[in-house]
Amino acid sequence: MTSRWIEVGDRVFMRRFRTWGPLDFDQNVGLVLGERGPVVVDARGSHRRAARVLQELRSITRSPVFAVINTHHHWDHTFGNAMFKPAPIWGHDNNARHFLERGERRRRQVSEIEPRLADELAEVVLTPPDRTLARHASIDLGDRVVHLRHPGRGHTDNDVVVEVPDASVVFAGDLVVEGSSPGFNDAYPAAWARALGRLERDVTRGVIVPGHGGALAASDIGSRRAQMEEMVRLGRAVLRGELGEAAAAKASPFPRATSLQAIARLRAELA
Image (cartoon, rainbow, N blue to C red; front, top):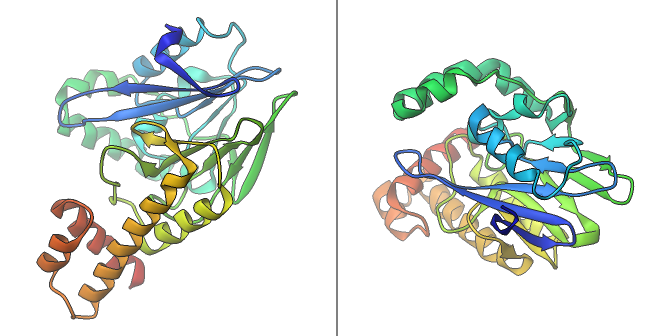
């Protein structure tokens, strides 16, 4: 089992879980080992999927999970939370709020999009974070510290970046993706570009683990930031009436549907 977990830094691992179908993910789960026990980054999208994580962890460590961190509120990162209790679940303040306001609706929506997941999702006990942060927090593992930071709105209004300084590893959640386009459903594109700029400034070396896709070098953040800035530039031109949506989508670094969604979200963000 351990071969599926890639050690990207000293006692810091990532695991890519691939799924197919209408909800096509290449999703990452992170693991940070410490004296007080392991920290899991993102809990996957159901009890069954979280149970697989727990099963695989037994081949790496026998220590009970010390904490779980949700990088943001989306179901595929959080619906497995209950399986890790009684470990504390960390997330941004808005993550917990979205759970209460949107959790059941999102369960129904995903079940309609992918009926094969309906039974699996019906089992989920919606479990929001019970340790929340507004901007910064730290988890002391005895022999190392894990830092949690909210870089501002971006992919959502509750993104959390997880930093393991002694290993030079950063788990960026869906602020950064590899091998696919960013998701703009709940996004704030202009703020996202600024958040990537902060990440680029603060993380100058080491490994970036995206929410989906393969690990990246810190130097790769710049290209993501530049793409987001270009998308925002095109979107602003549309909003000023200088460019049509079709022309902006054609010039965008992202696929057409993604670009149109980004423009819609930018319009709402700047309204």
